[in-house]
Image (cartoon, rainbow, N blue to C red):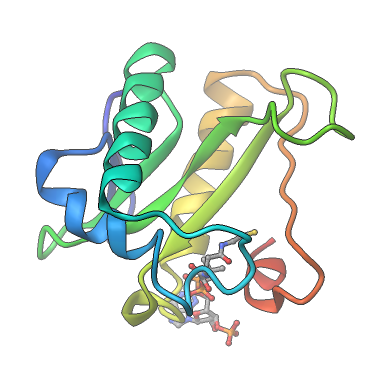
Amino acid sequence: MKPIRTERLILRNWEQRDRALFHRINSDERVMEFFPFRRDGAAADAKMDELRAWIDEDGYGFAAAEIAATGECIGFVGLLQTDHVPSLPAGTIEIGWRLAPEYWRKGYVTEASEAWLSFGFETLELDEIVSFAVVENHRSIAVM
Ligand SMILES: CC(C)(COP(=O)(O)OP(=O)(O)OC[C@H]1O[C@@H](n2cnc3c(N)ncnc32)[C@H](O)[C@@H]1OP(=O)(O)O)[C@@H](O)C(=O)NCCC(=O)NCCS
């Protein structure tokens, strides 16, 4: 994908240096509070490789978000085709997010999402982008 620049962030494909952070946001209890799984290092590496290959193929995906001023990877925000939700039609595109806790409540997800929504509606010419969360996940619903 061509990196997307926002006011404070660079949205880009995954790099080797992101592996530790990606593992953390797949295993940290606070981050994963509303998910029924945790990924160990090997499973996180495999998932990151899968996301990276999809981004290479499609030009978008659950992409890394990096703070432009410091180069820190903070998590992911992006668009993804949902094929795992039986109630949604095949080909539905979701917007999703997951950051390491020290980067919460700074507006990074909202900022990145605005850029991804523009990309989805204008560049991909989508009619609809969906997002969903369990009802207890107030932080995610607030971003929506
Ligand atoms: C869900 C999640 C991504 C939300 O993160 P977040 O930090 O609350 O979202 P944002 O980055 O958009 O930040 C918004 C918050 O920052 C505050 N904020 C601070 N500075 C800001 C700024 N410059 N601009 C905008 N908002 C700012 C906002 O007021 C808001 O806080 P509030 O909800 O208390 O009003 C995060 O909690 C997370 O990663 N959770 C674990 C994974 C997860 O559940 N993913 C979703 C599954 S459905």
